[in-house]
Image 1: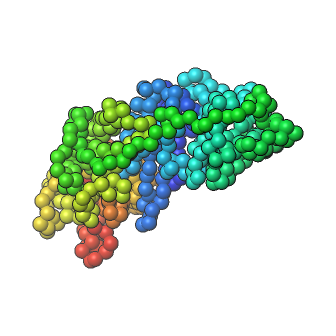
Image 2 (image 1 turned 90 degrees about the vertical axis):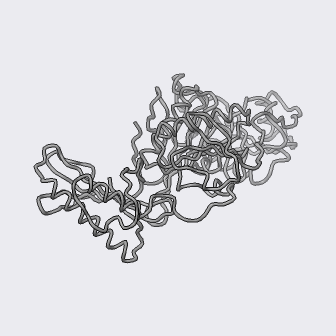
Image 3 (image 1 turned 135 degrees about the horizontal axis):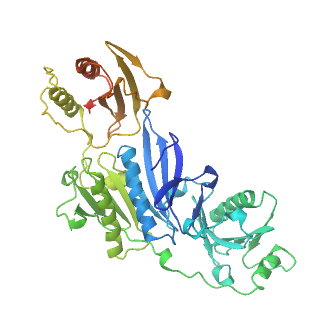
Length: 469
């Protein structure tokens, strides 16, 4: 079970025995190659709501079952948050800039994993590690074999030994990567050497047997020419080409013909948008969690069947919270909210009261009555709870929200933001099994809250609807 502990910032879980386990803050940035992780980034937005990005990170040595668990738990976490998060698949060595930006100065990939019974680096006998350090804005640190053949003239390398950390600057490396590597060295020095080890800079092509350069080459068995950079599968850059839209039904992917427009996307279905370098999964708001899991797996299978490079990105977006990079692929994407609007919300209020035997004239206006409760609610809004005592109501203190006594009844008003960042509402009552309150009193308070909100809506306030469950 995923438990959220903060309102903003970064939270991380590691998959252990197919369950997400919170990672201590002290271990943030360490990612074991044999494990899979879930990373939640919560960002406050204008208007007091929150934006969510969920990443699941897959180490190169993790098992397929653990990677699958991380993907499934990511979808379940999104459901807890109200089904509005953007989800990202992150493969070791091909992480997005967005993901890497959460960790300063970089993430540290480490050998081993939970299944192998690893020891923490500080508990291990110190072992020399050679890293290649790439990236001008965010750092991509990759451990490579400790061998002269790993070095080249184009990259910056970091050699971490017990008493000294060396930075090797390839002759063709750029100044930005050299500067970033120094930040990483300072981080390693503080993290694993208690800030006491020496630091040395070694420039490619400048050999001095009496300096740090001489010490550096001795560790590799003596100086010898190094070869050119060898490109492998990890260096392949996916191609970008005109997007193609596919529908996903029961895990099957089928092409959708016609020009790409927003109107092709039905809110009870899932779709795959193939852009080559990036594959999007679009999820309709009234789809079920199982459909969403199946759609995500279908995207994984699709990328695999197409034999795409490992750097191919998979991003999942929810209806109403599409990213600009997703919308840019459509010929037409009209402005306007795709989330439930005010008229639909009023219809839900009337439907609920009608089921309880209460008739409210003029409440639905011209909108049709929709008798379904939204399958997922936004998880970033304002919660207000009142305890009902006869004809009076008492507001609950913030620390008591979530505590419900079986002998009492409560009214819950939840204010959140729709797809276009406008406010929407969810209003409901909770009736304890031992309560003696008359249902009429509860419905009266529900009606009072709805009418209060409805009057404000019609007076030109900024809110645009009310949904009731």
